[in-house]
Length: 360
Image (tube, rainbow, N blue to C red; front, side, top):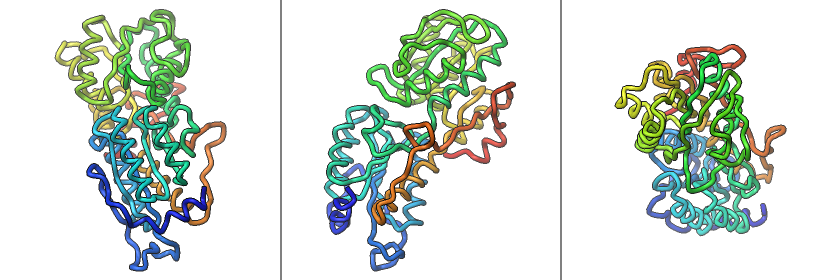
């Protein structure tokens, strides 16, 4: 594979970027060796979209690393969460340019054949944030432990209920495709609550009523949000129509949580409802401080992107590949619970501390 990457370096400055892509060249000397005695390495970052603050921050992290490492960076993105076609085209463009590697947050299994084609062509492919299914579709994944992220907010929620019955709205990512970040967070949340799950890689197949670690529960709904504010609002409205007594709202991310809160406000149902999420962006941390979100699991997209760019440059130059974290099939970039209502037995930081680490 490394030999194929080396043969492609001569083509790194050929081929124009696609219309949806932006090329950013890191600082280096005029010899084109990035100031390190090695030839310039080209990397593509392909995110799910270019509007979510999480992915905007990831792009910023990649730019920063590219500048520091003398890497030629191309940015591309889907038009929205779930847009596999744009990501496939961006992968094809990276192959045509002769890039050394690709960093991608996959929008779904529809991109897997294109990823295989890229790897067969000699590109090293690293998934960021969202491991593909199966995980070995890519060479390695740099990501949050999304199951742990869900588990943390689930454990926190169970303690806050203090034995009261839980009527739960699960506001997921999709209902028309299976993506690991979606089921990992959902199933992690239920596990943290002490609710038995069936297939850990499938949302919605758990018992709709039963017992959690502190009392009884009812799952009112599983609704898709597409990870967007408007999707979160619509999903919450649908859930409230089915069961106006919802007192726990799990959301796939903070934009969906904002939408859910607006729906609860419009229905006059914000009092006594716990909203929890995953992201840890600066807006989300402020929502924790303001009491809109009770707790969120903070991720570190800047770190994912920086490590990804550095890894591909290192592979292209000397063949040294990154390794997965112990006991996991990906490299864990960390997760921290942010809440201003600390719970016994659940490690967390305050929103003030979270603001020091947040992004976006």
